Length: 615
Ligand SMILES: Cc1cc2nc3c(=O)[nH]c(=O)nc-3n(C[C@H](O)[C@H](O)[C@H](O)COP(=O)(O)OP(=O)(O)OC[C@H]3O[C@@H](n4cnc5c(N)ncnc54)[C@H](O)[C@@H]3O)c2cc1C
Image 1 (cartoon, protein in one colour):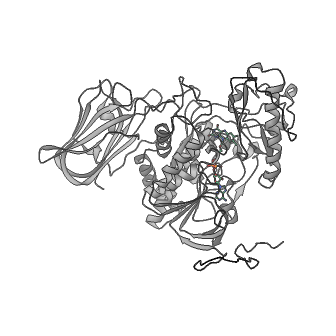
Image 2 (spheres, helix red, strand yellow):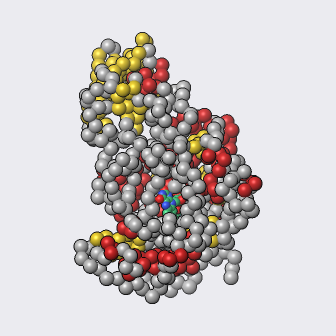
Image 3 (tube, rainbow, N blue to C red):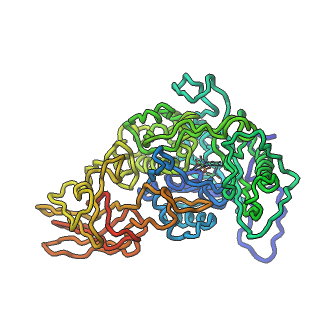
């Protein structure tokens, strides 16, 4: 076999064309140039591409499937968790770009349909004029010179086209990281030994074990008895031998523990494992239906079964820093923190469904508060223009057991997308951003509604902090001066908000001398202590709501005081965002007034932050 097949060789084509076609040729090649290429359109890749695009650079987002979302897409149907399982039982939602996506989904997908969710993501990405989205396009290799990627080669399935993408910065958000691996970026797979990072949950000696892939399924109540006969490829589920943590109920949502991992080359094994997973998935469903132990399942039938296994672990690329378990459990403070996590240390057992004696996950520890993720874990140690976000970042196997959830991958994505745009603007590498410009990166992220724990914003460009007086029409809780304290959510018993008494509330920022501004940016309440992601089995309870967060501001307007006269500078009547922006031509003002008229149900207005800028 040739080492590299020439994908453009179409010399065997015998094309007889009818009628007239201009310049017909079966050889289809494209050479594209952009500023940033993002490979992989899961939650991390979407957020990376959107962050970079919104920060003013041109992006090509390459996704090998027909839909966006990665494991969260309708093809796999994993729930976007993030910091959703703190010890308190309450979440600490991520905010930023992910928050905008989840809110958008509330507006356009009240029915919680996964296929509609795919297109909410499609809508979200295609709204960005700086993004060129390439679906059905797989990045197959990188072309690298002097430790720098020059371009990547992609194969577009639907058009039989070989596409070369030249870019200044490359971001691998593909999970498996084929692009980064073929660039020669250093990576590891498997489990570190205990001693290397002082990890109490690591094995004594390193080994190759990687958590497995899963095929999910869902079922629905047909309202009548539904007998079931399983197909011949079914692998019997040996329920007698299984650890009780492999819970069957609720069976509606499928079984995340139907998992096949590997201690060898998990990517090479993927196709074989897919067939085994089909057998295992149907085996568990056969047990549900035919063991006689679940009479309540009599009226249930399979509604959807995945064909594409969701992956949990393969390559982890090595950055300037490797995030490890002690960083997470000791809540280490990183000067270069750009993201955060807090999902428990959810390490699955070696063996997956073939190791029935052990619990499917060890759930080593739940966190009482979130931990920081440093930027130095998000770019390559040896390839100078390569970053990554998602499960493939620079971290140990145990650290991955917490950080791999998609909300956390998404905030990493926003961080690297923003950082890559700074690289372009300054003409520098990610490493230089880490060493010289990380404060600027952090400030931009927080301006864009990212949250960095233990790192209040202090953006020198934010003119709201220079106001001589801040007042409010009424105050039920908090303080209007907290709107400039740099923390845009309440934290563990610390209040960082202002809340009005009733609706139609006003906040006024005043200056003794005129200042010029061109934008006012407001962070309102969406109740980050409740989950709002897509579920397969939706429910309303203490930690989850199925509706548009009632706290979200629906209608809001802005007035500017120019030459002593109040003038309206915009009204938004159907707001869908936590970060609300008013942009206008530069104006000399002595005050601005935010008039928050209405919410989606809450009786008061709650704000967390107000900023204003002169460009
Ligand atoms: C069954 C299961 C249950 C899980 N449970 C949860 C859960 O409840 N909540 C949670 O948040 N997380 C869960 N996880 C973990 C989580 O889904 C993954 O860790 C996460 O999806 C990783 O995100 P990512 O963006 O790095 O990769 P992905 O979500 O895999 O996205 C990467 C995308 O890149 C594409 N891609 C790959 N290679 C290329 C290429 N060469 N060119 C172009 N595109 C490419 C892929 O098709 C994919 O769409 C679960 C995982 C599994 C498998």
